[in-house]
Length: 332
Ligand SMILES: C[S@@+](CC[C@H](N)C(=O)[O-])C[C@H]1O[C@@H](n2cnc3c(N)ncnc32)[C@H](O)[C@@H]1O
Image: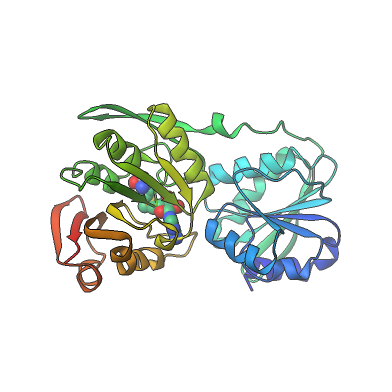
């Protein structure tokens, strides 16, 4: 059980009626609160919850229209995303209770200060390295317009400027990541056909690919609903067309790909892990055609080449700069 869920269970008497659990972990909590519904923006967690508690968890960037007595937000990593989510929830919770639960190391104490905009906030519990806060929503904000919160920047690429739009909580919000910038300089000679941008984030790589290889089909995949929505905004801002899909890991991607391009994930929440990327390297061959290519950027300290060579083919380093490397491997 996630420690934040354990804290809620310590206060179970507060959560007996219809309840919304926003950003809930994929654990047993819904089983303990029969009148609760979940809202998740993580495709992997949503799918696990839906398998165990069918129809009780909604996936997306906005809460489902459902009447609840109280809502709990599980504190996300990003401060901007927290602000959007609190406003989206408080806009629906006038006169009712809004709770915020999170780990101390994730910044719950600081985040709880944002509750003051809605009413008198108080700390209800502190245990398992987490805190639980509550506010009765006296001042309901207007429903936030998510798209108006997108940050926009322009990239001066060789084939013309590219507009990039990113929503709160999305990787490298409002600016280009150094690794992605290096990968953008190494998009030459990818095999035409069907190209995947794995972990598309705001869609910068996928949009650049579609413009560079207009005859190729481009699919963009991300686990996060806010990233998927951002990628759609980025494509629209550049009048480009590609398939944008939500899914957890390479298993959710199509097969028959001519190339997989990625600045793969290496952080998740406050914990660091590389599972999704290692799984990508192990499974990429299954998704590529016999002449398919994997091209990715990674921090130089990450030991990906042996894994790539074991599961795909010989790994070439196309560039090594600013602490990042571009790797290229074709199926042997
Ligand atoms: C390093 S960021 C790169 C984002 C974007 N391609 C760019 O260059 O700015 C990695 C992305 O992978 C996504 N991601 C993390 N775990 C994933 C998973 N299991 N399946 C698919 N995408 C995942 C994250 O949400 C994030 O957007």
